[in-house]
Each structure stands twice: as structure tokens, then as C-alpha cells.
Image 1 (cartoon, rainbow, N blue to C red):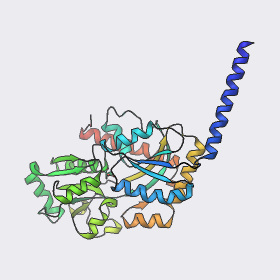
Image 2 (image 1 turned 45 degrees about the vertical axis):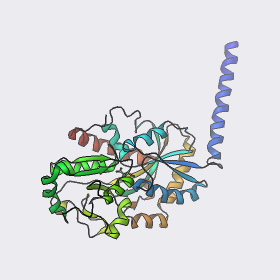
Image 3 (image 1 turned 90 degrees about the vertical axis):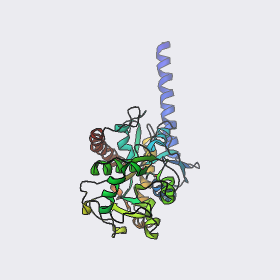
Length: 328
Ligand code: ASP
């Protein structure tokens, strides 16, 4: 009898808790803001996409989205923070391709991108450009390659840490030209760009979302876009393939995640607001101006992101393993 009473009490408690969860989900977002963790420095490319998105998405969500920058270790520190955060919808992660390269690069990552998150949807695709300091002698990519080979021991290549997009792009570039340079890690490519402009480092591969201003002002040397076709907003920059280095294709995709166990109705609300934001003409125009492309609504969904992330992990893991690079 005692046992029965205990089970009934447990069942009632379970129902009450479930009801509380549903009620919380129904109330979401309530009056509290949503913190969007960007795992790179403020002012950089991921941050720019995130801030533009947050402005539009806040309207559709009915809550303020606040950006929290937590850079370091190629985005893995910020991702880990979200993995460990409360799963009530008030903390989300805005990350990029690094979510799919980290499992191969970090043997002790501490989280599994395919198991430890809820998926909200993709945001935007951004091309990369190899740029150099204005005073670097070569003016074209064709001239840059022999220059690097002749000066390899003095050449430096900035990145946002192991696992970052700039790191991946730099790896592919160095392996494509079969020459190693000194790599210099930063907490994001915003601080790296400052040093590149100042001449402390020579080269960097970065998203156009970070470089657009400098490219338009002509304050650095654009050598090549790292994809098979030219970038619409920067049509005058030739691709690496056009200039003799084929097979480099690094498209940076950004997406939004929540901690594992965030209730489905909450994820659905976040995803619905994301879908409205990516189809917002103002957001799409802003992305285009920065050389990026906001995804269509059907890619701003949990299922699409989950499938795409898995395919990107399958794509990059063998590439990274072949390169034999590890962060730890
Ligand atoms: N562009 C950086 C990277 O290389 C990230 C950032 O600073 O937003 O991953």
C-alpha cells in the first residue's frame, strides 16, 4: 500500500513538473532577455552577423537578444559555456563552421556537437578572402605564392585560434601551396585585423563580413577569394582557382544552437523568429552588402541544421585528420 502511495505521489510530482515545463515554455520568452553567446571577439565577422540578426530577431521573438562575446580556442570556449548553460531558452549560441571542425581538432573537446545541443537553424553563408597587409610587396596572388616560398620563415598568418574558420582556411591554403608559415592565434579576427592593418602580421584568411569596410576602402591587399566563384559584392577579387590554386572551397556557415534539453516549444519559438529574421528584406540586404547570403527559411530550421552539421562533420573530419593537426 505504502509502495502504491509512493508511486502515485511520484507520478503526480512528475505530472506537476511536466506541467510546469509546459507552462514555462508557453511563457517563453517572458520579460527576460535572451543571451546569444558569440564565441569570438566583438566587432568580428561572427559578431557582425549575430548583431544584425539579433536586432531583427528580437522583434519577432518579442524579447531583447543580447550578444555576449566569449572568444578563445577557435570558438570552443563559448560553445562549451552554452553547453553548460541552463536549458530554458534564455541562452543560445551563434557559431560558425567551427562547430563541425572542432570534434576532429580537439581530442578533449568536452562536448559533442551532435549530441549535446538543440538545433535552432542556420543563419547565413559567408565567403572568405585571403588578404595581406598593404605594404606586402606582391600585388597579386600569382606573385604572392613565390614570395611566400622565398620568405616562408618570416611570413605570418593570423587566425582566430585552432578550430576557427580562419585557421581552417589557412590550413588549406598552406597545404595547397605546400609551404608552412608561422600562425598567430587571436580571440577572433577583429583583433587580428587590427594587427594585420598595423603590420604585426602579414596575411589572414577571413570572412567578407569582417573585411568589407577595408576592402571597399582599399586599406589592405585582397589576394583571392577562397571559393570556386567570385563573390557578388566583391566581383573584382579573383578566386584562388582562377589564379592557379584549385580545390580551395571554404564556405563559412553560421547557425544557432541551444543547450540540450531546451523544451521543444521554446526551440520552435526561437526557430520561428529566426525564420522570420532570415527572410527579412533588411537583414538579407545587410548580409548581401557584406558579401554574405542569408539562408532561405527552410534552412533556418532544427532538422535542416542537424542534418547539415552532421554532413559538415563528415566532410571536414577526414580533411583535418589527413592534415594531422590537433589543438591539444
Ligand atoms: N573569423 C573568425 C574565424 O576565423 C571568427 C570571428 O572572429 O568571428 O573563425
